[in-house]
Image (tube, rainbow, N blue to C red; front, side, top):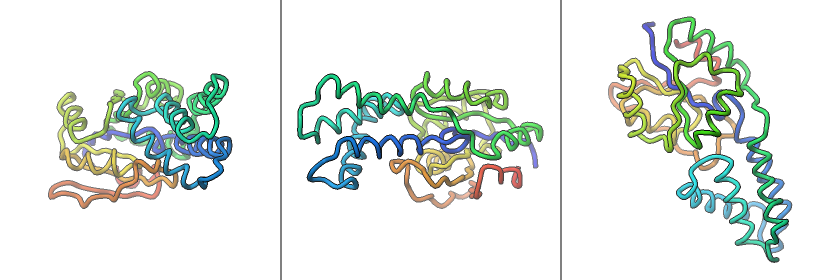
Length: 231
């Protein structure tokens, strides 16, 4: 295969991410201990609050903290004291401070792809400081020629990155676990895609994978290491 450009997602593609949010949410719902809403109903309410806060605060642990506080304030059956407010913010801090757990096979696969002459670029969304910090802490940065952190992964963002580096769309791919952010918008922008499913993909990223448009290639693999079979 000729040299390809691979834009690669980070969270839940290169390392675990959403599992830490899910654990924190479970602890938060237990702490809330709502008397009239089931844990499932509280979770649905929190999902709506998160959608609302993304528009205000973007993605990442800071936005997540705002969502937890907002959810607690709206659902709590007692006043939210400053001490309780700080306690809830502590839930989100646990997420931002969690050690990165690299997904099995990732370093070996990145090394393989780089040695094969493929051009690797991190393509992630969220808070610049938080995401760049994760890349630095991961120990994977040296495999990548560049790191692109965008506010939102939509077709315009992919078109902008392709133009910035003057990539050739037919030999450019986006690899990631989110149909909503990684696969569908990349194909809509005119580049190929590799869907790497993850069992714990964030519920707000759930979406059906669209059929590949004419001239666009779409691969689905079971795990990140399977990229070695295709590139």
